[in-house]
Structures are given as structure tokens and as C-alpha cells.
Image 1 (cartoon, rainbow, N blue to C red):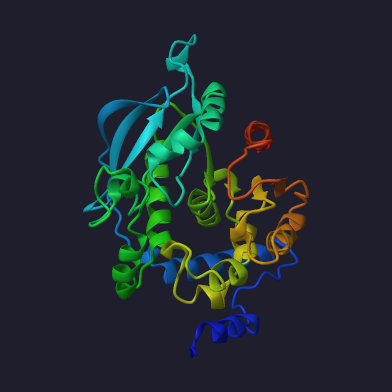
Image 2 (image 1 turned 90 degrees about the vertical axis):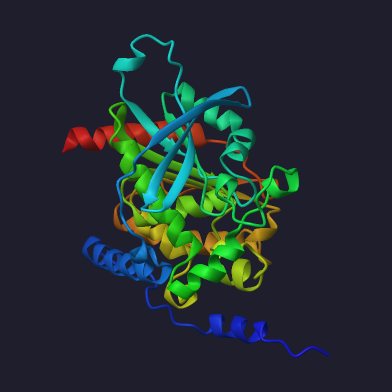
Length: 348
């Protein structure tokens, strides 16, 4: 016989009243809600406790990963916090390469591995982006890749695939912070640096799988500089995918989040920018109701897009597999998003 507690929290969540449930009917109401929710998320994630500093970017070396040339850089995101990232450039042998301005694509990694695993698992997508002229950037999230803490450090394959998010959360929560809050802060500081590069044309997109999808959703929800967002394997209702599956990575958990908003609200913060969601029919992380746990949250997100008459978004691409990146339609999505942004600039 076991006397457990988690069942109580499932009921508590079912009967909750979200402080920032989406209910806007006009653009003005949407903007007021957006500001209020972002302010609350900065508070509960601890983003407002992060400390700004100049990036002090340093190039360290060039590696070859899956036959792609990747420059290894490190920047500061807080005075004593450094973030390594790979920078991959389009074909520098093309005519007038140095004279061209390039869009930027940040590709955060998933829960297992770091920036190398991103290149290895999403090689085709990255090759396409490079062919389309993107500067592609693959950073290490805090606690992953070259930012692992003891005892996950080491070159053994099993350790390389691990992260230190549990250890980070157990410490930072006592200071009112969270892993995803720090991750979003780091991506914002990375964006500061990248958008200031002389070769940047100002268009910034973000795309990720699983934990990379999580970073993409949160980063795009909190920063309007992200002009197009792609998440794969990470968009679903919190109850079935986090409360009923509490063994998921510690980076998912934030004080007061379950009282504040659900995934649909995070998606609504991205509106009206182009947003692409990829789901697998057999992805166990969707929860017990499967795709229905995704669709009900997308229905919330669509309400925000309808307000802006952006009824083509979010795009929902469903494949027959499990928790995996397939990528169908993503290249076309990014190209159309760039064309849309270009048209918006011209019309201003």
C-alpha cells in the first residue's frame, strides 16, 4: 500500500483557474495581456534576476561536425557565465559572399547532448538553411554540452548525452530562478550579439527539437526579435505531459507556472509571427490523449492569430512517427517567413 501525493496535484490542476488564461478579443486586449504575462513569466522564471554584461565574444577554433565546418565561439551572458556555441556560415566561395547580409537561424539542442548533437541529428535541415543563406548558430544550454556540471562531466558517450538540469534547478530554485529562465536569458544575449554582426540582415529565426523546441517556444514567446519559430516534439498541455509525467526533465518546471498559463498561452505570445509546430502521432510525451493534447493547446494559440487575421498560422505538421524531428515543410516555412518580413518592412 502506498500513500501518494501526485494524484492530488492532478486534481488541483484540473480545477485550477489560470491567472493569465487567454481571453483577448481585440489587438489592444492582446497587447495588454501579453505585457502582463511576460512580466509575470520574467518574475516566476527568475529571468529578472539575471545580470546583464557585454558579450565579450571569443573565437576559439574551427571543428568539422558531420562534414560541416563549425566555428567554436564563446560569449558571456552574465558577468561570470559563459555560453559556447557553434557558428556555421553559408558557402564562402559563392560570389560576393562578404558583401551579402544574412538571416540568422538559432538551433537549440534537445535534452540529450549539446551543440554537436544538434548538428548530427539535424544535418539535412542545417544544410538547407546554409544553402538558403542563413548563418546557423547552435548553442549549449546551461547544464548541457560543454556546460555540464559535476558529475555529468566527461567524454564517455553516456555522460555526453546527459545534462545537469536537475542539479541546476535544485540550486537555482532557492534563489528564485529556473533552468528555462536562464536558458531564455542566454538566448536573448546571444541574439544581441548575432543581430549586431555586420553580416546580419536583421532576420532571426529559431528552430528546435524536444528540449530545443522548448527553448524555441519560450525564447520566441518572450522576445519579439524572433521573426519565425519552429518547434518539434514540444507543444502540448502541461497536465498530461508534465504533471502526469513528472519524470520529464527538470528544466520544464517553474514555480507558479501551473497557476499562471498553459502551453497555448505561450504560443499566443508568439502571435502574429510565423509559427510552425511539428508533432509525432506516436510521441509518448504528448500525453495519454495523444495529439488531442497538442490540438487543444493550438486552439488556444489560434485565437491570438485570428485577432491579427493571421489564419495561416500556426502551421501544424503531423508525422506518423514518435518523438523525432522529421522536418517536412520547414524549409518552405522559413523562406516564406523571410518573404513576409521583407514585405512588412517595405510596407512600413
